[in-house]
Length: 434
Image (cartoon, rainbow, N blue to C red; front, side, top):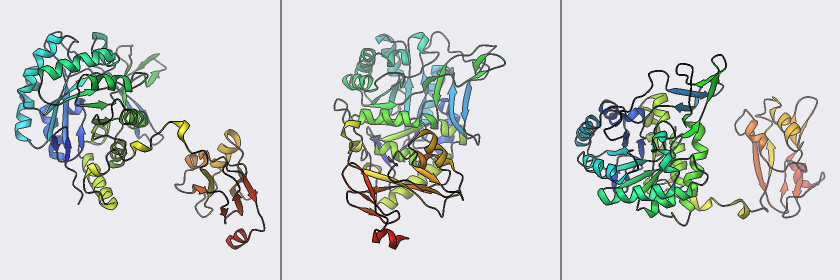
């Protein structure tokens, strides 16, 4: 069996699946249930200092985007950091860490951008014996209006400054949580690195309005006739998060900086993809809020089985393996040629590929009178739109062709390095294939 034990910044956990700082990690009851369900670690919901109270709305806090089958694709929230007293959270964290010493417990923190505020809270957090801290520089709503969260995360100089304070007054790992609400994620990551951060975590939620109530004429969720922007998360943000993780992993100025990946992780495959791009572990929120804490058991078994099939004995064997293959467009091989092929045995004759290609692409699919769809190789530019709109998995595939190679199914040949084709109807290979 593959060993899923993870060592992230010297913090050991039974697997790489941590719960992100969010409503599921707001109290002792939840965290204990999470550890019993199988989660390897938890980032406690963001703590703040005593002072002006944190007061959440008493109306709806979430908005959503669904797929056609009402599967939750994206979740928007307007909830603030914990509204529970700091001392209560610290006491609960102390008890949990004592009872679960082999599980990772990280404290997420957000206080004003003042050295004294950080200097005051860090010793109190250290007394819990938690394994490290995560600086919440990402929350895009509510706290940002108070000069915290993404208001700090969007200014690299502030990121470096606060990170330096934390490294000065705290002797365990410091993780900097980055906001995606920025043009180039590399700059805040570089600032965190320059400030001495032990790792970065990303992404935090994306600034968003998910829907408008056309009767009330207000954004949803609606509070007494008004709405506001919130933080967007869930499966829909995964592509954005993966790109940002990859950008940091391949940036020479942050090379080697450990990454904890966050953003739409729902299955073991999602986790493996992030880790292949360079993440040392992953943090999950929306999947747990959608399916409950036991969803981690499917993640654990799936990742373990995949690693066994691949011959990986530990997660370290594949972390970062895909990162060197992320490149800029200018370095892509323009001599690489593929053509679409439709498996007639699997085709259900819906015509979706034909409509998409005929109307919006390159008119490279022909339709016969009996609704048989075939690819016109001389017109196909290998965009693979047909693959993506086909409702039958693997019915349409892209076949790699090399110069001089004959496709026995169609009797066509790649004649040069630029993908030009010549049809040979009397080609013996084509005749044999027929």
